[in-house]
Each structure stands twice: as structure tokens, then as C-alpha cells.
Length: 275
Image 1 (tube, helix red, strand yellow):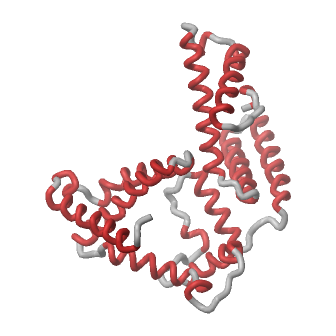
Image 2: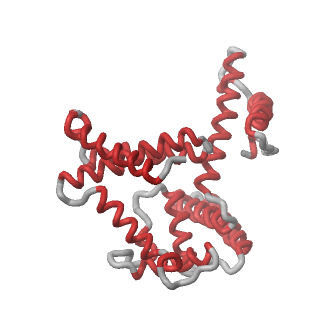
Image 3: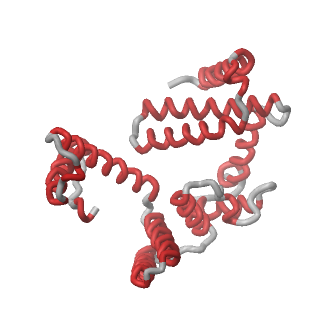
């Protein structure tokens, strides 16, 4: 591992390179906060994918890409005489010190759960911080992630189930309401009840300490692998999936599952039609 001095020198090198790029590269010189925004979102998702794949080489690479964006925005801020990278670093340092009185002050915290419970109250007291508990949830978050963050912040304020298994009664209740609206053929209310079911399932995942976004992405990857395997096998037979019966696809799907288990070292007894 690099020493503290080596780390500082590496960061300084990145700052020097950004100065050069901003001055001498036409593309870099033309960028604005607005033009970088979409790329920043993309880089964030690429980092998230590397994390879910537990690919340390890619995590390192994507962290570098994201760090470049932080430095880029700070450089633009410096040119506008609004802020620079030192201001960015000092702002987060000040925030961390303020939000960790059990580390940098006289408060005491015996567990991570205690810290989490006091987190929202500390932020409400913070100068320039959120005026309400849920204000800190970005409106632009993907809906699944937003639901999880909303529920987590509410939990930190004491609004939560006393016993986590009680959440399943709520899930069943929401599913029942959904089924009723489906029977009534009311599309608008059906959409609403689907949202309630999803929200309750995400809540259950949170209570059982499962990140629903990670869980769903792992299932996405699993499905993609197995479906691609099935599609390739059918092409090798000179056929199309559209020409096959479900029973035929099911047979290849089971073969794909075996291959997937061997490559992932996991077991899964679910069938295609129940997926």
C-alpha cells in the first residue's frame, strides 16, 4: 500500500493533469457542469456494477473515473471563483466531524445501530442541513433506491415496525388489495396498488438487511445469463425462440441453470414459469 505522502502526491498529480487538460484540450475546456452531468451518472452506475460484480480491478478503475469528475467540477467551480477542491474537501471534513460527535466530541456510541438512529437528528441540527427528515432524499433517485432511502430515513426517526416479521402481514394486505383492483379492471388503481406492493416488499427487504437494489440487480444478471444461454442454444439448432413451445424453452432453461450454478457456485431450484 502507498504511504500517506504517496497518496497526497498522486492526488496532486491528478490536480495538475486537470489544470493542463482544462487549459490545452479543446474538449475538456468546453465542458460545463451541465455537459458533465450525464457522464457522471453513467460513471456512477458503472462503479455500482463493478461493486455488484466484486471486481476489484474495475472498482479501482471506476473510482478513478468518478474521482476525475469530482476534480473536474471543482476546477470549473474554481474558474467561476465559486469554490475549489480545497473547499470541497473541507466541507466534507467539517460535515463528518459534526456528524460524528462520538468520534470527535464528547458523545458516546456503543453500536452502529445507535449511530444510525441518531444520524437524522444530528443532520436536522446541522447548519444549512435538511429541515425535514425526508428532505435529504434526492428527487432524481431511481424509484427503487428512493423507496429504500425513504424507509431507512423514517426508521432512523423511530418510525418502523416493532417486529420485522409483522411486515409480511402488510405485504399480504397490499397483494390482496392489488388482486381486488385487477379483478375490478381498474387500470389506474391497479398501478397504484402495484406501487404499494413494491413499496412493502422493499420495506421487507430493508427489515431483513437486504439491499433490494443489489438483490434485484443480481437477479437481473442471473436472468440475462440464462436467457442468453437459452437463446444461443436455440440459434445453434437453427431455430427461433418464437417458434418454440414453453416446454421446449423450459428444458433448455434448466440446462442453463445447471451451467449458471457451476459458474456461480450457487443453487437455485426455481423454474422458469415461476421466475
